[in-house]
Length: 347
Image (cartoon, rainbow, N blue to C red; front, side, top):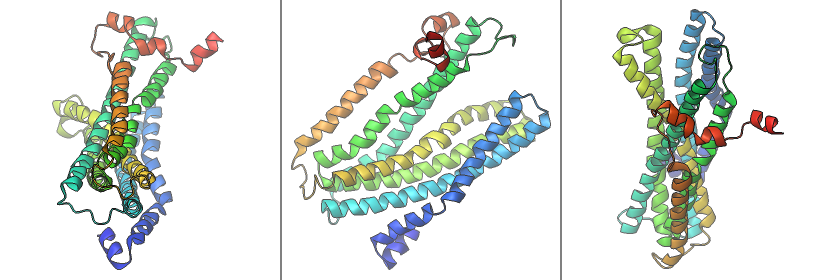
């Protein structure tokens, strides 16, 4: 409604002003976003310090509230990202001289369908990345329990630097393919087909990305809070019940929902809009399929990037339930990742 009335009463510039207005609440948004991690870290510190049970109960209650405030803060981020992307889409139409994009045009409709698919692909890739990184850390933890004497008895210290290094390395490696797709997808549609198809693609990506991001923020917080509700209030029989185990499994989906895939969609739609606006002078005035052969270049780059990522990062994924002897023998991340402590020993 805000978008409709702003555009009707003023002009396209009012959409950008609405985005600036939402971004002006940055202080409140940062405060609501920071509340959840602070309460979560306080609970972790209380558990590691072996404080009284009542302290952990208090931090759990605060953490449950933090999930709600985080969902509220993510709503502000999603709204500002959508308004910003819409203003960039309007600027792209003017720069590329698109005119009216009729949804009945097969070229525009195909772009809408392709763009609506991209947030789901992006979200799936980021969730797989979380699963693979978590699996690599599980393998490293199993390896340390099997190889470090006294770790199970509590008389030796774990090498936590390796787990941090695995997480950092995985976060960089797993973002290669989503980043390539986000940057090259607008170029594929614009160069291969034309600016009208790219306009439809941006519209579809913004619409589906907004709905998917809101759903992920709310569903992820609900999954997390359902587990905490059982643990804190003792609902449905409390801990150890089948219901609690199901909620724990759901939380493993809810965490990447609300913390990884959902917020990343804001980056996706804004990045695609900015890339499209940057490429608008190149495809200005192009007719459909006029210079289609230029579109083969970004398609080829996407194919090459997919093959390389699959060969170097996806092909050798280990089974976290494999026997411990195989884990010790075939743990490439544990052997290849250089940690700060290992670098100091080497020097």
